Length: 385
Image (cartoon, rainbow, N blue to C red):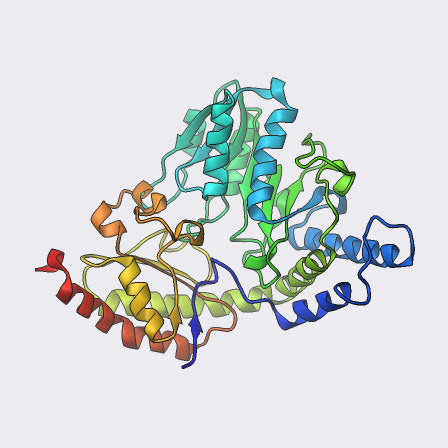
């Protein structure tokens, strides 16, 4: 049975070109990038070239990129290290109700350290409004962290406008762009952000490597202690193969960005319309227009999302009901609840996120089997009788 993978917001397959670029740094060119001998210099050059590729994708400077183990570490460093390094900036943090737990939990951690935390509500489409941020700003607001696009419902936030409002209030602005780097055209200077988090495995790179963009002039202390790697901001031997893979993935993403966007928008639109037109008592979640290319997020009344996933899996269709990081939880998604959905509706969520390898035939298969799956589950549901 052919597998149809539609869970690209959780992770993506490593592109063959990325994999091939990484192989030499596991075998022949295995040096430590901090060593001064020949193998070390080869590794250092590879790290520098990859850093340049990552910086080029988002319009950053070479020295503004700090490699991390992934998006979670980048978010933690942006929030914890910035606040700990700028104690006089204020004791107030602002974030939103739809953030990934890597941001929300980190903000709650800082709240336990004595910071005050404001969590902004969102519209039913998942948007943080400029008015909400403006009203929450205080003279002691040190940091605002709002994600670029939501990992569950795909809503893209008005980051440029939000960052400008934060700066007008003398606050620093961070965005979790794990879902958008490589999918949307990003220029950090145009967006006006001070810090931005990214992760390679969301754009056909390897797992275990990401980065934090830190705008020149923003003071952020070291997050891990024990060495001078990453200009003293992130100790630990560089993951050279991972960094090389990240750089190659960024090169490919930049080259294919417009082509992939157009394809994903077209496929997702047909998938979305097909689901909404063929299955009653179904609602789209997230913004209908300002959403990630390839992202389809819906809720079906009278059924459980987990049951939908198990039935789809029998047909080789791999999807999710929300964030992979909370798949072990039986509670409804905090994102869907923040949108104002009732528990009984939020439990019936399905997230289909397409990638560059998906085809029209894949969409046809989903549209062929999904209506019957929902019909059968509703027939068994006591809520539907």
